[in-house]
Image 1: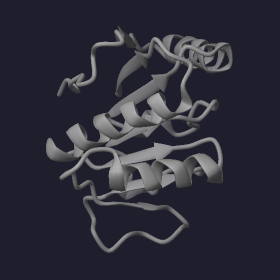
Image 2: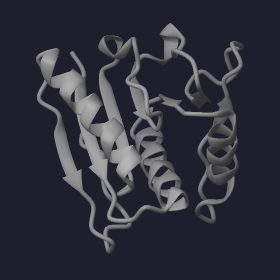
Image 3: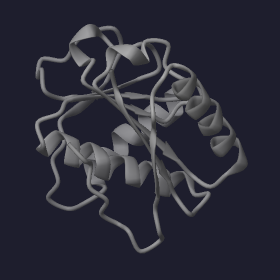
Image 4: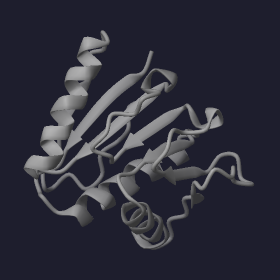
Length: 153
């Protein structure tokens, strides 16, 4: 049964949303959680891949784009647009407007939303689906000053 958390940012900035995702991914990785990131497009996957290399000086988060080939490093972050491979059914960070079809397979689901109407609308649909499945998602409204929000274990 997954623990589901929504993070709602105060901005409509796509870049801020990806930066926040990078911070969550870094915290998850440092806590020993390997993640799968579900993205909406190849461009979004590539943007996150690029940002994970440079979002903070001195940070290292092993990651790669998922192209149906498993990475050599088993505890890395995978970024893709398809269902996660079974070995990555630990933590899912969802940036896609679609709710993952295999969400019941994960221990933890992180939904990162910006303040745009399109993203919030998709988030509402995901929230409703999770509720109908019997889950109680947690919502965290992030303030502009909250640059470091922790992932609860």
